[in-house]
Amino acid sequence: MEKPFENFPTLETERLILRKVTWDDIEDIHAYSSNEEVTKYVTWETHKTLADTKEFIEFAFTQYENKRIAPWGIQYKENGKIIGTIDFVSHHGGHHVAEIGYVLSQDYWGKGIMTEAANEVIAFGFDRMDVVRIQARCFVDNKGSSRVMEKTGMSFEGTMRKMMFVKGKHQDVNMYSILKEEFASLHKPRKEKANNI
Image (cartoon, rainbow, N blue to C red; front, side):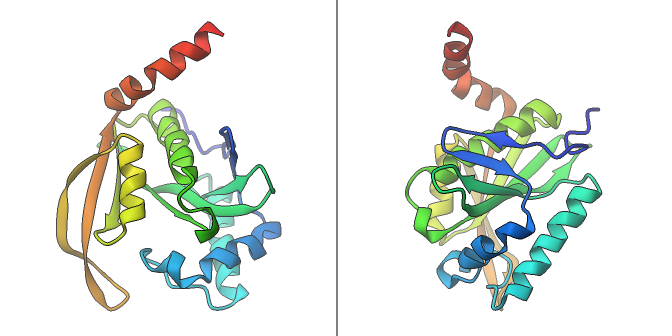
C-alpha cells in the first residue's frame, strides 16, 4: 500500500494552500485557538497562552517527523495567514475507513472555506489512502460543522447519544459519512471538465 504521508503532501484549492504548520504560524494559530467561540465545539481546551499553541505545533512536528497522519494548516492565499487546520483524526486501514476533523478562525466562517478544504482532503483520502468510507462527527449543537459535512455530500447517519464526555459534559454527537463511489459521482462533472480543457 502507498504511504501517503511518507512525504507530507501540500494540497491546493482555488483559495487555499493546505500545508505543514511551522513556527512562523504560531501567532495565527493562537489567534483562533484562543477564541472561545471557535473552541466551543472542539474536544480540546481553549488556548490560554502561546505555550498551549506551542504544544500543538510540537505535536504536529512529531507527526510529520514520524511520517504519520498530521494536521494540514489552512493557508488563505489572499493574505498568507493560517486560518485553521484540517486532518484525518483517525484511519482504520484494515476497515478502509478514515475520519476527518477541522477547525476554522471565526473571521472566515460562512464563506465556504472549510467545505473547500474538506473536499480536497476527502479527495486525497479516497485517491491516496485506500479508504472506501470517510466520516466526520460533530456535537449536535454545532450547526456550522453539520453544514460543512452536508455541503461535501456526506449523509447524516444518526445521533450517538452521550457518546463523548468533553469539558465536563456528556455530548450527543452527530455522525456523517460519504463513500468513495458517492464522492466520485458528485465530482465527476468537475473531473470531466478538467479533462476537456
